[in-house]
Image 1: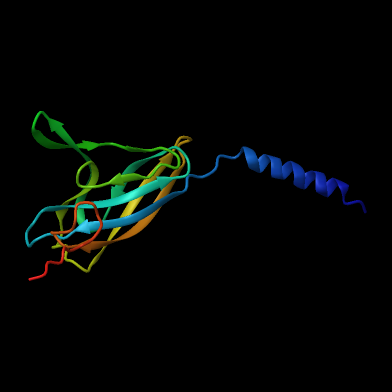
Image 2 (image 1 turned 180 degrees about the vertical axis):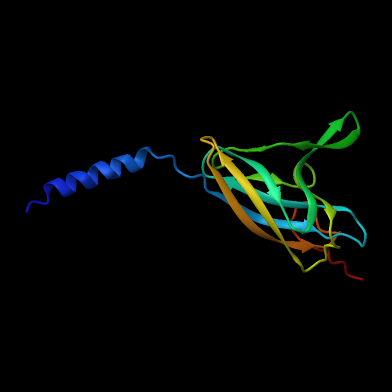
Length: 160
């Protein structure tokens, strides 16, 4: 029996595989959530997202909050404000940072105080240009209220 038809079939199958849309693959780095004080109703979550293909962050959910939205900081003259955005563009290969000064995730209607040392589960929904959705589950550590805005060092140490 000749192997030629099988090889041809495998080659055709391999070519077909190349035409299928590649599923967006998005990585999450440096995710964290700002600790809250007792009875505080909301807090922020921050991270850096990098997608392998042009994609967008279209949703975030967390069991610690009734409502989770992506917000953008805005400046109207000298007045700082926040507004909800439905999606954040994630250009292929470019890290997009969600931080306190730009886009960020708002956890609203907190069910309990979010305390330093805890992990907050976040479920991110990423959609690529073909409409393919990717679900990412992230465990974001809770940092203190005084956490550095850049997401770097948690504390400044001062010598007396």
